Image 1 (tube, each protein chain N blue to C red):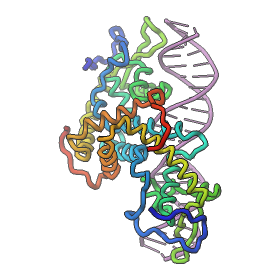
Image 2: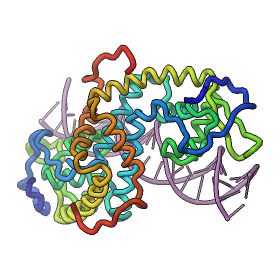
Image 3: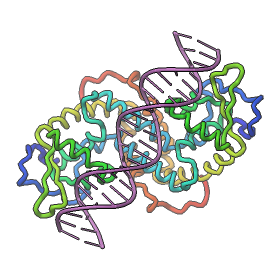
Length: 173
Length: 173
DNA sequence: TATTGTTATACTCTATAACTATA
DNA sequence: TATAGTTATAGAGTATAACAATA
């Protein structure tokens, strides 16, 4: 690691030679940064592979939940996708207007809106799922067949992580 | 999986009972969604653990790169952090004004700005790194000591993934 | 011609809080 | 009182494109 205690005297500063020579320090272990970069790459690959006219990953997630769970509510969608219910409103409205889903307010509880996919929604989801599987196959080539399940279960554990579960920590590493 | 081919007749729709009963379908394998959720949880834990007055993860990443690589340029920081150079400008300007870093335009190439941390910047980074390691320790408890390296190397591989490396894919799964 | 850093701008995704209508 | 969904608003994080200075 380089000496970084110089307080700012400008004369002796020297440019870093090449990118490869950089020191990452704690960033090598900084899971959050690697999660962000990996997420962005996965997102971009999905969009490139499915084309600009297809639904984006977030909407695909919602539509897939509706297709697989006719009668799902907006709140349930939010919980399943790890988002606040308010983040789902616009997507569902758009899907209803576009004819991908229909929503019903049941007499037994007129607060809730139960969503189900229309034929058009089911078909779109099915077409997208084929492409999505190609995307996953490409990712799996990177991940390695024997590591895939472990990766996903690890990500799920991190996703469920909350400060409630959190053990008290008094010292570093 | 439920029958989802209903085209919209409203009478027979039934609410999903409980969240646990939901069908995720392809979403179970949908790495991108799990990456996003895991990233958000990791980000939130970092912020909670370090406090509101500390730098956020993005700025911590930049400051750490500067501390570990005196003389690093803005473009190098961007590449190392997986972001466009334009996304770094505001952070570096702010850190300079706050006295965390100083920047020098060398006579050998007056286009570039070489950053180095001041004493104040080094101290802040060191204090934050202690807390950041507590955050990583908590994450590692979830990840499992024996899975940590593999997780990070997998995330790095996904992060470097580009359509250039991408093999042609003609069929699903 | 190419590169560094800057600026203006805009986009995506998401949450918070206040609201309504129901329960 | 509590819950489902809506709305308005705002924030974080980031990229694109055009630009000036410099190489």
